[in-house]
Figure 1 (cartoon, rainbow, N blue to C red):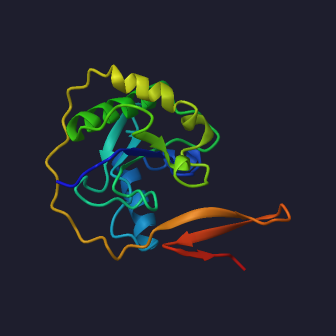
Figure 2: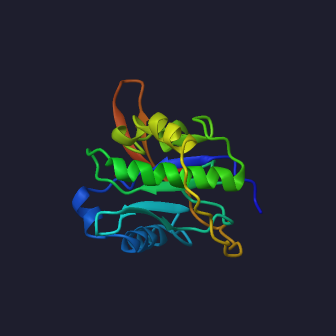
Length: 196
């Protein structure tokens, strides 16, 4: 079993309508297809939390925990959780509870301390807006919920590892120039690409 030092929280940077059009497991398949189109071998996140279409928020399996993630360049040994909520909105309490329960189970399973040093937002590793201002503002609260979680769920047995060493690591970045101007760009592995 690989060492898992912590958990990175993400959001998909999609609208509420885009997320609602893909309830439950369909959202995982939607993100999987997007990631594969970008050169990933599978969905980059280990878990995705979404509405099942009937008003319940659940954690859905993404990439197996035994595989290296593809969600946070330089920190893919951490588990990645994508919380499916629309940009500019606030995740509902039921979704925050599902997130905290999943965090509690994962921390217990992999001996990860339940604290903000080990449970972090994507933006804490690189300059971006992920996991969105609304969720990022709630991370301390989510960690406190996880500490008190009574969830008895267990992480299921994991699939054998897959070679993901040839995957591209893609991040949206913003370059700031000395003049104060900025440019949106892509960081793919260690190379920056500026759109024409």
